[in-house]
Amino acid sequence: DQQVKQNSPSLSVQEGRISILNCDYTNSMFDYFLWYKKYPAEGPTFLISISSIKDKNEDGRFTVFLNKSAKHLSLHIVPSQPGDSAVYFCAASYNYNQGGKLIFGQGTELSVKP
Amino acid sequence: ETGVTQTPRHLVMGMTNKKSLKCEQHLGHNAMYWYKQSAKKPLELMFVYSLEERVENNSVPSRFSPECPNSSHLFLHLHTLQPEDSALYLCASSQELTKNPGPGYTFGSGTRLTVV
Image 1 (spheres, rainbow over the protein chains, first blue to last red):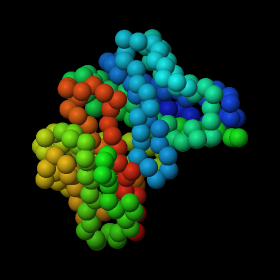
Image 2: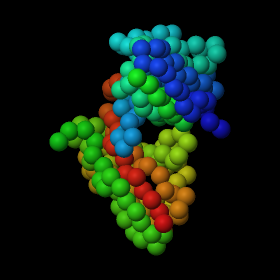
Image 3: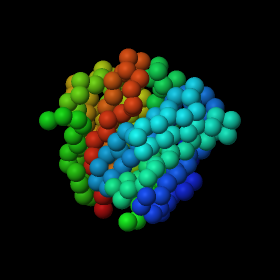
């Protein structure tokens, strides 16, 4: 059973527009959520995170929204840039502060066209 | 050198070969991990080491054998693999999460393994 799902394998956006990447989860006990970005031939790098006690976290062009009732997480990138083209993974953890492990989604490949 | 380094970057091996993947971290982290990323699948956690002790083994076949000789090094020994084992193998490290609830793991660049 896949607890973290990214149902869109790919997304194409025009430069300057908003990119919205979505993530759904099934375990209501998850208490920490993270987004990672991965370029080809590189490991994932941490992008932004959010605790379950919040519903929004913003860092520059990146904003993560958490809707606990819908068990839904989204990453907004505004404005999108060609350098944002990469695979984006969401991850979730239960009991994160006590060493809970990360469970990853399948990833969504974002392509930002000039 | 900083971060998490994995070698080799690419590996092609036959089903009867024995090879090893190496991971080295220079971050002073206490926990290290092996992940497998197959095409169109989520990252799968394989093994977890904390302070050089294996704390988790997620039903991984015995043809994969991890080794953690010290807190900076992690190996994945491979033998008699199958073509379906072809994947990107990622190493990661982190501070013990109870002490540093930071942004998560630091990943290496991975080893792209092809089994022929």
